[in-house]
Amino acid sequence: MKHVVVVGAGQAGSALVAKLRAEGFSGSIVLIGAEDVAPYNRPRLSKAYLLGEASLERLLLRPASFYADNRIDLRLATTVAAIDRAARRVVLADGESLPYDALALTTGAVPRRMPAAVGGALAGVFVLRARDDADALAAEIAPGRRVLVVGGGYVGLEAAAVCAQKGMAVTLVEIAPRILGRVACAETADYFRALHRAHGVDIREGVALERLLGEGRVTGALLADGTRLEADLVVAGLGIEPDVALAQAAGLALENGIRTDEFGRTSDPAIFAAGDCASFPHEGRRIRLESVGNAIAQAEAAALAMLGRPTPYRAMPWFWSDQYDCKLQIAGLGTGHDRIVVRGEGAARSHWYYAGARLIAVDAMNDARAYMTGKRLIESGRSPPPEAVADPAIDLKALAAL
Image 1 (spheres, rainbow, N blue to C red):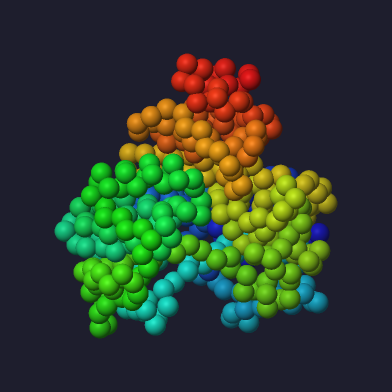
Image 2 (image 1 turned 135 degrees about the horizontal axis):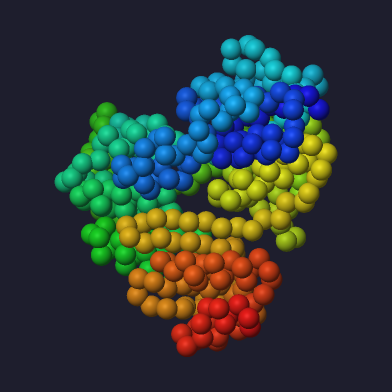
């Protein structure tokens, strides 16, 4: 193998090229990114960066010099027009053609946008996925302005928290019966609903957005229950979709993203995928994870497979969110739980997800010890009795021994 091309200069792409060099690959590496900035920590955009507490330089995953020092040809503000699988070449939008022996697609995901039919094309409507999105939104944030956040997932809640902290009047609407309905248990949703309401956020659940109001620029919104809201700006926190356009055009197999095996290989053995855009086998089913940890570990597994040292990727999911003075840390996947055990009370507490007698996930709010304990237990396949988890007299260290 002499030539590697990686399309997508995010967390997964940066991790993959770094792993190739760390493992001794001496051939050419081209890393292609559509943005004009070196790979950076995307999750922090809706947290410290939007708050103005972290500069773009602090978000960079590696110093800009890393790529040149490691002979990685970093092509920024560059888009790929097509993949020629037969010739094993990547065709850039400017017509240049790059050869590859191994190609990695780390294209990430794209935000779901509001349809133009309901006002999504009005000025003052924002998504929050890339650096440019965060910069555009930050320029509109000011005390006393009114913001409508549509969507009660983590990005929507993080945006609401930033706006509230900046002195804005915040209303959040969620079409589902409750916030965090797809990603967290009712107890965790209750915790964050109370936290946001304590900071003045007006949360409305079980109500759909009918349409945005305004001519040229958004001025408000009409909800499905007939309520009219005034708004100076709108943040659409509607989730993301895997960016599979290139893979689809190239005829690669898709299944909730780009379908890969346990080594990161796609349906073309010369093409790999990793990160938010890729789905993979996990415990008898196929999943796709949107997290930093998955992007890094899956990309590193793909790099090893490229080098002829395939090692099955075994996902150990973990996630995090910062809202106000609360740090939420999540270990595992709560899908399929039938019982929640609450440990602690007040601002510092944890929610432990059980499927039968098996511990499958932990949500820890301001409780790093509970998170680390739960993470170690899940990764080792151990499950303390739920009654022991709920007993405050039993120390976390003791739980690990049960």
